[in-house]
Image (cartoon, rainbow, N blue to C red; front, side, top):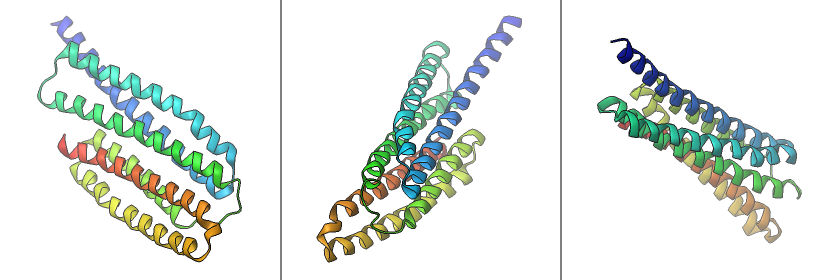
Amino acid sequence: MDETRRTSTHYERELQDIKQNLLYSGVLTEKAIANVTASLLNRNSDLARQVIEGDAEIDKLDTEIEEQCIRLLALRQPIARDLRFITTAIKINGHLERIGDMAVNIAERVLALNEVPQLKPYIDLPRMAEIAREMIRGSLDAFIREECELANRIRRMDAEIDTLNEQIFRELLTFMLEDARTIHRALLIMQVSKNMERIADHAKGIADMVVYM
């Protein structure tokens, strides 16, 4: 009986470790988005370089979480609710790793933008970043608390990001049509916006997995 109880307690601790590591990964991705946005707004290239360098920690955590999940699947052979939790955690982990990659992509474009005169005030991009961070935080919260209603609210937020991305595209297209000298800078900003939109897609993907679970 005591051995069974100890085994059960250890198993629960392993599940909690996965949750905590996913939350920490979420914190790291949120920080990356905040830093790369600040880098763009303040033309601080050092922050962008920090985001690029910090991706290694997100990648390391991604590997650790995946190994934890695979080990539990192999050794514990979970069923029903726990099986859904672990398989969902694996997919959420993948989304977070991709968000880290998107932040690096943005940082690389920001480094280029910081080397040239600013084309326009950045108004919609910070809003996109704010929504994306809220979506990451909310989707992980929904996962931990197993709240379908919260997950569905996060999913609906993706539409606002899409609208802002389209708005930025149309505005920058006008710049390029009016003055060919703006094309390079406009394309870089478009790529930043597109990567923000893709980050939101991955956050929505996390919320989708919560609903599935």
